[in-house]
Amino acid sequence: MPTATLPKFINVSILDFSDPEDRKKMESAIKKMKSEMGKEYPIIIGGEEVFLDKKFGSYNPSHKHEVVGIFQKADKEAAEKAMQAALKAFETWKFTPAEERAEYLLKVSELMKKKRFELDAVMVLEEGKNWIEADGDLCEAIDFLEYYARQIIEIDKGVPLTEYAPEDNKAAYIPLGVGIVIPPWNFPNAILTGMTSSALAAGNTVILKPASDAPWIATKVMELFSEAGIPSGVLNLVTGPGSVAGNYLVEHPKTRFISFTGSMEVGKGIYAKAGKVVPGQIWLKRAVIEMGGKDAIIVDSETDITNAADGVATSAFGFQGQKCSACSRCIVVEDVYDEFVEKLKKRVEKITTGDVADHDNWMGPVINEASFKKAMEYIEIGKKEGKLLNGGEGDDSEGYFIKPTVFIDIESQSQLGQEEIFAPVLAVIKAKDYDDAIRIANDTIYGLTGAVYTDNEEKIEKAIREFHVGNLYFNRKCTAAFVGIHPFGGFNMSGTDSKTGAPGHLLLFMQMKMWSRKK
Ligand code: NAP
Ligand code: MG
Figure 1: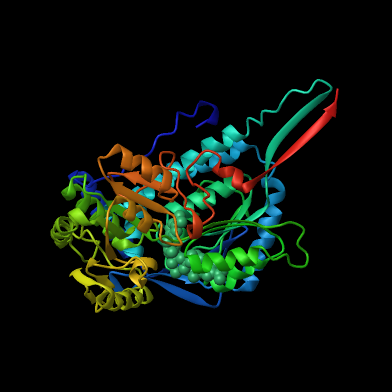
Figure 2 (figure 1 turned 45 degrees about the vertical axis):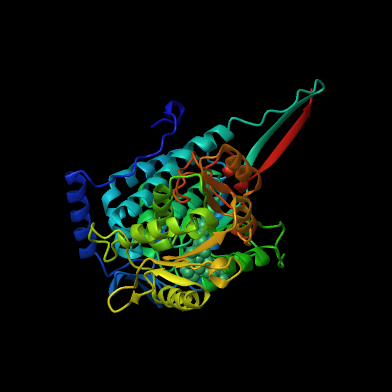
């Protein structure tokens, strides 16, 4: 589609699978992708498929012995080749008109729409997403492609400057160079596609190092970019441990910027390394670092408690609590504490857990063995720090399943009150009153998402002023941010607040050049 006639951006609607046709399509896509499991996939450097000596497997967390695919374990040598390919491609890509770059994104969007059910099925099998979560992930990926395509066309229109009679002055945003894109495994299509397409749209070339728990979906997205005809070397895919190829590229003198989303621990390390100027480096690397959360929902007395319990359960246990935006602290004012706890218990009891290839299971497994063990350790800690209300059990005999777990009477400064668990474990904290609830909500090093359930306007105003998070919601869940509607990114140790899906996001990957001529 010619970019000049692009319709206004609108978000893709998520399927709810109530339509029997959609259910049938999804069932056959899962069957098809299951039949493709176990294949080996190359890394892509300068448009070439590359196979290496060392490989690793990606597994189905619902059936832990099922290998979904075999991938290449990139070493430093492969990473260096990817850097050379990306540097070479930058010399032409940086002068490719913005409209043309946008067209590639739009082509990928079209291809992704065509492959919708297959890609959804990959995320069911590789990441243990239930059908709706998988489709939500895919819709967000499409939204990013469409949104950033339009944004780069806007940015390309130029920079308005103040008139100055003796001179003719102009300014334009130009790309930075080679970017290293390091996404997490939990939104393996959405975040990966968003981070990749933003860097590319801005005119940079990219080395994409996907998470080791999600190389299958990363490879499938890479295939779409190749099918869309993205020139060789503009996007390179390098799978393998972050600590090897990822780290090598972060430290590389020719790396111009790093776009990272993941844990605070890894993010802090990358930020520090990005700040170190190494021999041969002639710029300061830019680092966009988005990290974890310990997100709180406040339940006030002036609200519908049943509705609040529903929102808290969905926010805490959607995708097994493995969202940076997941509610992991629920702060309830004393007056309604007992009533809320009772309603939450009943609501959580309704949650079904099991293999998500079966649409009837709302909650699936956690991603891997390490994650399962970590969550089970936190459950033991929770038993000491508070009172178990729901769940508390895990079963890893077939997949990494943990029952939705709620602890009540948790202190804010306890481990369960402070540390990101990234699993279906919720801490409920009692507050004396609303002011105390706001204080507790801010009593964390993070500042990503938060929500407040209250009908009181003054309390809403107070939260807008004082609840210090990047994404604040009222009377709704604290998960599910839509591109363009809810710009996403957090404060404090949740990251650099890059606000994805927001106006101006692409400027993070660009620099302004101005030129002035005497008239
Ligand atoms: P992670 O363990 O930090 O990994 C993120 C990425 O960094 C992966 O691709 C990983 O590769 C790579 N990596 C690891 N060590 C590295 C190193 N030394 N150098 C370069 N790259 C390295 O995070 P995750 O488990 O994938 O994702 C979950 C975390 O992401 C949670 O903390 C969650 O809150 C956060 N998250 C934040 C947002 C947000 O928008 N703020 C969104 C989603 C998720 P390997 O997999 O090969 O180790
Ligand atoms: Mg990890």
